[in-house]
Length: 174
Image (cartoon, rainbow, N blue to C red):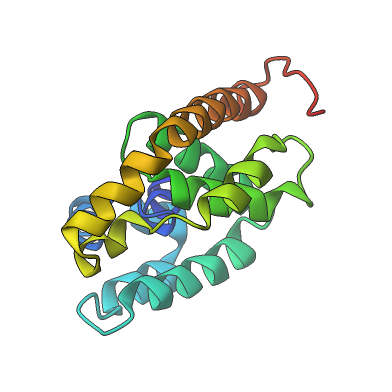
C-alpha cells in the first residue's frame, strides 16, 4: 500500500495503531517514500505512549506539510470516504472531519455539515461503554430513523467525494 495513503488511514483511525506499526516495520517502500528523516521519526516514535493518537496525528501533519503539502486533505478525504463506506470509520468521525474540510474544499459536500451538526446530540461509539445500557438503547432507538437518513446522506456524500477524487464529474453542493 502507498505510504502516504497508509499515513492518512491511521490519521483518520481507519487502521489501528498496532496495525500501522506492524505495517511500518514490514514495509519495503516506506523508507524510500518518506525519506530518511521522517522514516526514522516513525521508527523512533513511542507507539505505547499516552495520547498516542494525538501525538502520531501531529507527527503525520508535520510530515505531510514538509513532504507533500497539497496532499494531506486529499489523502484524508480518500481514507475517510473509503473507511466509512467499508464500515471502519464511524459516522461521527467521518462527518466531523469532512465538515471541518468543507469551508476550504468546495468539493466536500455540504451534507456533512448537516450530519455533523445533528449527530452532536448522540454519543460517539467510543463513549457507549460509559453509558447505562438501558439509557443507551433508548437513545439509539429514538435516533434510529434519523441515523438511517444520516447514514444514507453520508454514504452518498462519500461516494461523491471519491468520484471527485477519481476525476469523475460530481454534482455541485446546494
